View 1 (tube, rainbow, N blue to C red):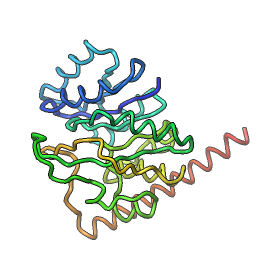
View 2: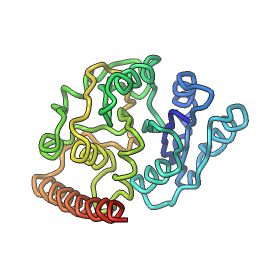
View 3: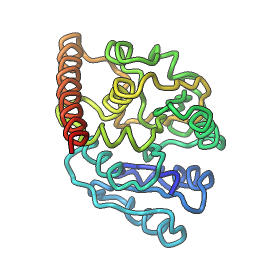
Length: 248
């Protein structure tokens, strides 16, 4: 299997069908969409079952019901593909997203993570609120840049399986999963590819998990200290494991 799409859902029935349609039309017959649902009480599970019945590439995993980080981790852990794309439940993938991202990977065997730009849209996708997420966030590759200001947006991210093998499990004391995965990739494998082309319509609405508001300075400092602490722990762990594997 070449490509896996890891999606985390929770009460996302309003937009889920449109998102799945935009994803599945870009995947090959041997690819998959893994959906971890965290106990939705709306029609999300009905939609998931309908897609599973008509498309064998869609697979359901019961979510751990421990929040968005654990839900995404559950989906990623269940993926079987060599390349893993993250997907939110309420966006729309533009038609050339998968092909464009995969061209970056195939053109650079050392590349481990690709993140592309996105257009931020209104709830009904009729008006562009922001033409470039990168410009808004000042997104740049590199660990230092990623720590100063989160340059990573999970729904715009794809990575090779090797990244998941090091990034998982995701520490639960971190603010979000995407910054962690991006920093792990940059730290262990070198700079990621920041693709300036918008390949996704990011739907902005009141129930969105992602937050464009800034935290207080104190919270930002605390979050970054936690990330640094967890990165150092993971570095020590991986070095120990690799040394053990080498010696055995």
